[in-house]
Length: 343
Ligand SMILES: NC(=O)c1ccc[n+]([C@@H]2O[C@H](COP(=O)([O-])OP(=O)(O)OC[C@H]3O[C@@H](n4cnc5c(N)ncnc54)[C@H](O)[C@@H]3O)[C@@H](O)[C@H]2O)c1
Image 1 (cartoon, rainbow, N blue to C red):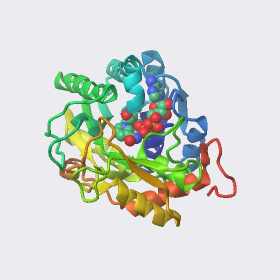
Image 2 (image 1 turned 90 degrees about the vertical axis):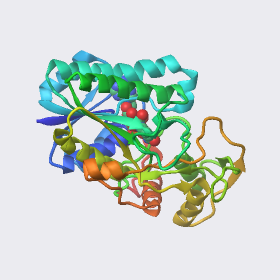
Image 3 (image 1 turned 135 degrees about the vertical axis):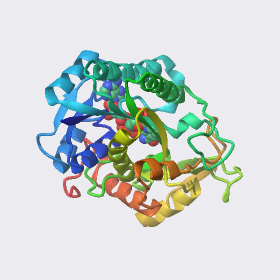
Image 4 (image 1 turned 90 degrees about the horizontal axis):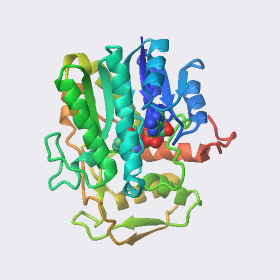
C-alpha cells in the first residue's frame, strides 16, 4: 500500500516525502506545479528512490486523484496542496477559497469512494489569529484574520464534520513557522516570486540578492521590541507527519495538534544568529508594524508529545545553517542549482 502526498513537490511536502519513504512507506506525489518545479520531484527521487511515483495535476480533480489512488494502491493521504500567501489571499480571496477548499473536497471525495479514511491535513497557527495569551494550546480561541487563514479554519471544520459523521480519521496539524532545509542541501524552500516570510528574505540579503531586510515593528512588548515567532525545522515537521499517520489508529476521528518547538525567538534574534551563520552582518532596518501581524506567538507543544510521541529536536542555529546550505547550493532555487556546490 502507499501514501499519497498532495502538494508533494512543495517545500514541506518534499521533505515529508523523504521522511515517509524513510519510514518504509511507498510514496506517491501529486502536485499541479503551480508553486513548485518538477526539479523538486527529481531532487526527492535523488534522496529516496528513482522510481518514486509523481502525478501532475489538480488535487481538486476527483477523477485524477482517484486514478492515482487506484493505480498505486493508496491507503493513506497527506494533504498539503494549497495556496499559501497571506498577501495574495487578501487580493484574490475567491481563488484562495476555491483552491484551498476545492482541493480538500477533491481529496475527500476520492478517499470516500475508496473507503480510504486515514488523512493528515496541513493546517496552520494562523487559525489562532492574533492570540491574547501564549503559549497557544489547541483549545485557545480560533479566528482567522485573513482569507488564507479562513481557508484553513474552514478546511478544519469540513474535515471535522466528515470525521464526526464517522467517515474519516484525520490529524489537523497546526504548523507554527517552518524554516530550514534538508541537511543534504538537495531540497529546500524555493519560493516563486518575491518571498514574504522572514528567513528566505533574510538569506537573500545575506547572499547579496537583495539590499536590506525590513523588520516590521520595533515597539512590540517583547525583549527587543521585534515580533516573536516559534520557528520549527522543516525536517522535524516532516517527521511529525510520519508520527501523525502512525498515531491515527489510536486516535480515530478528528484531532487538532500544534506543531512547534514551544520556544519563541524574536525577529532581531534570528537576524543576529543568521549573521553568525553566514559569517557577516546582514543589512536590516526596523520599520513600522505590518497590519495583521501578531506581536508574539508560540506553541504549547505538549499535545504533540502526548498524541504523536513527537517533539521538535533541532535548534534555531541548525535551522539557519541548513537553510543557508540550501541557498548556497541553489542561489536561484531548483532551476539555478550550482553544480559545484551540489552535494
Ligand atoms: N510554509 C509555511 O510557513 C506554512 C505554515 C503553515 C501551514 N502551511 C501549509 O502547509 C502546506 C504546504 O506549504 P508549503 O510551505 O510546502 O507550500 P508550497 O507552496 O511550497 O507547497 C504547496 C504545493 O501544493 C501545490 N498545489 C497548490 N495547489 C494545488 C492543487 N490544487 N493541486 C495540486 N497541487 C497544488 C503547489 O504547486 C506546491 O507545490 C500548505 O497547505 C500550507 O498552507 C505552510
